[in-house]
Length: 129
Image 1 (cartoon, one colour):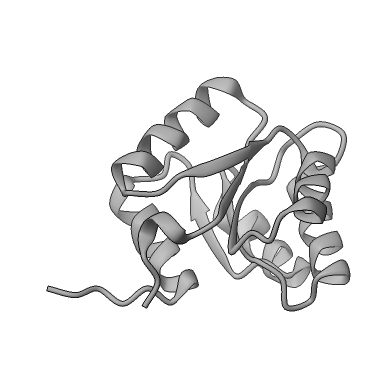
Image 2 (cartoon, rainbow, N blue to C red):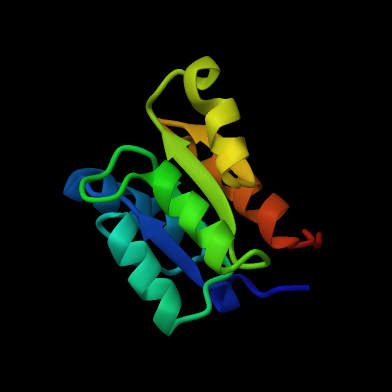
């Protein structure tokens, strides 16, 4: 069983307000996350640290989340779980995200319970009473 605080999470989000809100929600869920502002920063962060999970925005400057996901799967095939978080319509991009190598998909605005469930689902955390 993983302890929440031991889970290494990278939040890839270029919007400062969204980034701050996501960090607050993650903290309320008992998690800490490092941040990246674009796909290039995500790849750089993964070169220096073993993350368990990446919360990946799709629309970012320099390198978007889809391309970053593809690169992660190419360089680290067994690498971190990737949960795509997007404001795009699910029908438009869900398949594209999974084809790129994403493990899960959430729509913005993300509710705290949905985010917590997705993290637990992808990190293999077992809830105890």
